[in-house]
Image (cartoon, rainbow, N blue to C red; front, side):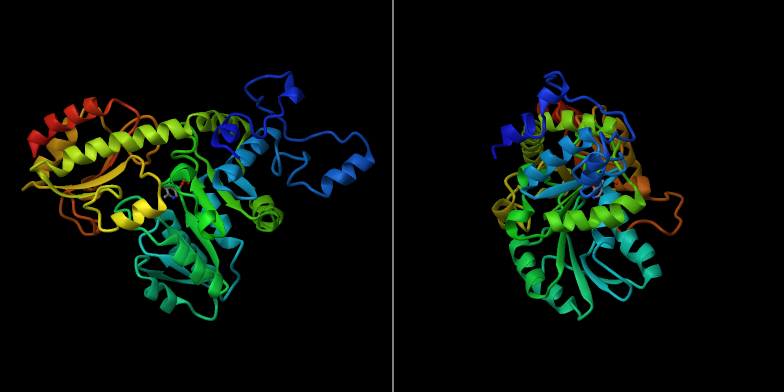
Length: 387
Ligand SMILES: *Cc1c(COP(=O)(O)O)cnc(C)c1O
């Protein structure tokens, strides 16, 4: 199906709601059965019928159809956060005694799920360097059930070869899961490479306006039906119809926003790499990136994230630089309209205590939003005098 059809029309049965162009927010917890036959029919397929909004809601359903089609998946579920989507994908495929192979340095709360939450239920894990297929293969045991990927991740952008990983998963009878938040389905469609489950933080590019927290899980129909019957309905981490409506609106401009962020980030990467105050830059679509070849082979774009390590002698100069940036907001998250910085130095205890992060304090992650790239470069140029 054409991208334009998915974004503009798929799932929108406008004749059912006064031919309104924009879908209504169906603010209802429950739905009336017209008779007992109707009741029986609907209970037989709660995933696709309208019974109760912890299950399926008509506004949420429009969003689900669009997201599944964007990923080339048979069906999708949406959640109240990306972390919920990740947890459900994992919980649905393990039981006590099982083992998970996961790429090292995944999203922080994915890591917490594996290291702090699942051990209580006797589910263990091994972190592997996802760049090394042999290391992945060697980590697989007889009780391994899941291969968890995140490609690229969102700090130093390590990639995995998705086709090769999918083959390893198939050969070893594992469920492969990927966190595809960095690329969105516009720049990477893992199901086409043979991955089983694709999860997203919908909070980032998919919604794209920094006003909704949401999660997405795409998979084959039988997997979706099984997750729906167990984790989805029992844990109840659903997205409201209001938030679903905002996300549908966000999706209308997803390809445009991705293109803009990608093009601007490319310009800013070129500015940064040539600057005397830049020690190291990480950007998957720049030829200096170690996995550039793989990135350009399996992704059609990289989006707006760039990580930079600056040349400077003191933490004080680093702080002055951060505080001199006028157009980049200091904040976590990314994927909205606004450009952001996440400076590692903000996680440092400058009074010299322990527990500082392993990442050097001269590291800053930039998210390039939808502003004029020249305007952002002028801000960087000015502030970098502080270094
Ligand atoms: C933000 C993020 C998440 C978590 O999503 P929430 O919507 O914040 O729960 C997971 N993975 C990646 C890569 C993220 O950037």
